[in-house]
Image (cartoon, rainbow, N blue to C red; front, side):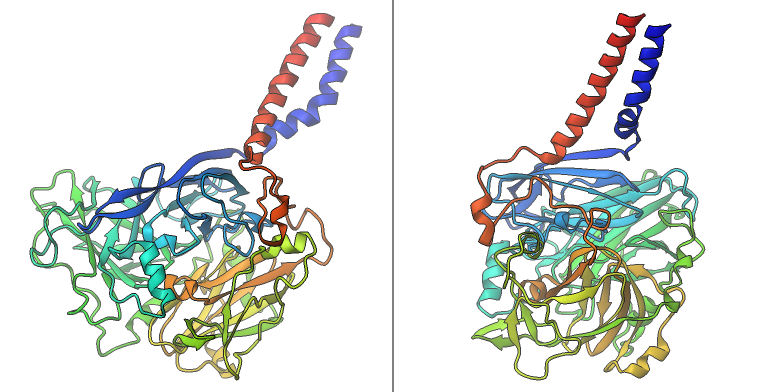
Length: 592
């Protein structure tokens, strides 16, 4: 009896440890080797960036609240970082994968990302954030599924398909980078890729022989969820499928009111989910098209991506002309009105049981207003640079969050202006000083001649208004204060404005940038620094033990390769469970 009581007391004593081991949310692991491979997506041999030998890289498939662990080995000939576009790393900007928060992974080093996909669902993508590398590939899709206990607001699709579209150049990313550094324009892209492949030969003049194209096989009568992301450099694309309707269902983590579109403009950095029912007679295959928007279509005709939708009972190849793009030559508001029609499904649950619309963003008092203006490239210190509100951002040698952790001075300034500078433009490391738990109104004013996309890491913002002309305070009367979509990337049309509202509840340093890669590379970005005045590990994760050091802290790098701290945590946890189980068995055997 005494021995039994001892074992019982022992089990009671270790039960907190066992619950700690088993009660945590599941871990999902990926091991990536990032390297160059030779490929010819548009028929011209070139060097592209592959993940585990694949271009595009593998799809990251996780479920709400999973802990994602990605061990990255850098086999490129330059530094590397990955960013997770649209994934709101709650309290953990250390894992954001941009230079403001993390030192890069040097050549032949490895580093392990670890973060929780907390209270989030939806369609996103990852990509390398440094040195114009996204122009060479390295990107892939991200799927965040609902937990089983949270219903999705539509019938479960019969399949889930990721489609990555984007403009493409036959020149290497280093050549493109050098072109921008020399103050020159990149010029017209050489084509559009769909899942890393060139166009189907729909036109014998425009498409050369030997191009490998994407073919997506479907079953007649079934409904599929198509997750489409524009992972390109700077070209807005119109997405459409011959003879099929696109029922919009979700964008970047928010379920939308379900509306049918014959085509949808997808701007750089944006992701959408469509429900597409295979309701045609399959007399032939069907074209999937992604074509350039807001350009001279006769000159840009070759900048068109074409894939094939293949029914399993198809009777022949796709034929005829491509489905027409929107005809808005004389109506510049078509695309904007289409964007305005995308509304939040306020009755649907998101990652949590409570309805998304219960947030009631329209009734929250705004605490800060920032007007961010972009203009055509300007000469600053003898170099053509992109600006936001007259400031062209310069990355510091020491990441901002690391500088904060070690109390370094002079790395950056919290002096980003609330309205555009009126004097000469300047270069600098100027940050927005965000107020923890504040509610910020950000006006994005595009005084350039091309569409710009803007993205904010760590957050979904509410897109409440857009229109042509100059924004004024009277523009607030046009805001949608009830069901404006919550997303992480929004477009701003040339000569127009877009306004977003964002609740600053995620502590950290978060990148606010142009998703157009050329604008971003040339300085059109800043960071929003959000600090809880009462520092604690509940509102922000501590600096990871496997952090790299650079800049003023380079002397802290003492080893060439680190053992992944994230892996050691999870491996150690498993060993602890096994050890405790063995200890219990031994104790029962001894005292039986």
